[in-house]
Length: 172
Image (tube, rainbow, N blue to C red; front, side):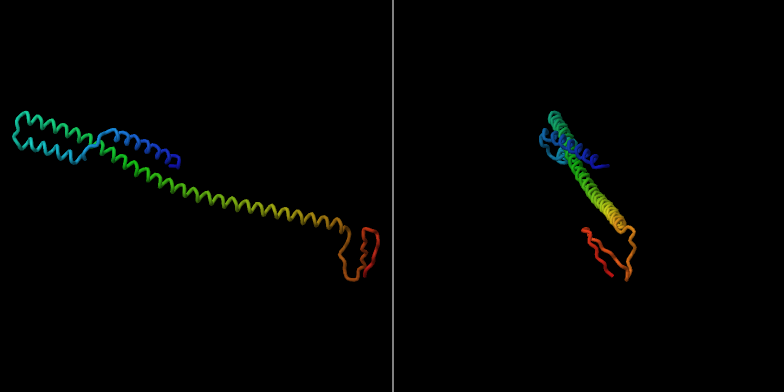
C-alpha cells in the first residue's frame, strides 16, 4: 500500500466519521443502553411477578415497548459511536504507517542524492584528469616542436643561444 492509497483510506474514513457524526447530532441524546435494558427487564419482571389490572398491565406493556424501542435506538447510537472510535484509531494507525514510509523514503532519497553526488564528483575528477593529460600532451608536443632536432646537452658541449634580436653569444 503506497502513500497515495493510505491518503485515500484516511480520506474515506474521515468522510465516514463526518457522516456518522452528522447522524448522531440529529438524534436526541438517549440514556445508556444498559440502563434502558435494565428498566425494560424490571418492568417485565414486575408484570410477571405482580398482579395488575388489565388496563394497568397494557400500560406497562406499552412502556416496555417504548423502552425497547429506545433501547434499539440507543444501541444503534452506541454502535455508531464505537464505529467512529474504531475509525479514528484506524486513521491514527494509517498515519503512523504513512509517516514511517515517508521516513524511509527520505532516507532513500538521501542515499540516492549522496550516490549521485559521488558519481558526479568521480566524473568531474575524471574529466579534470583528461584535461590535465591533454594539457601535458600539448606542452610535450609544443616542447618537441621547439626543441625539434636538439639533442640533450652534456658537459663540455658548446651551446649557441640566439635572441630574437639576432645577436649571438657562445658559452662553454
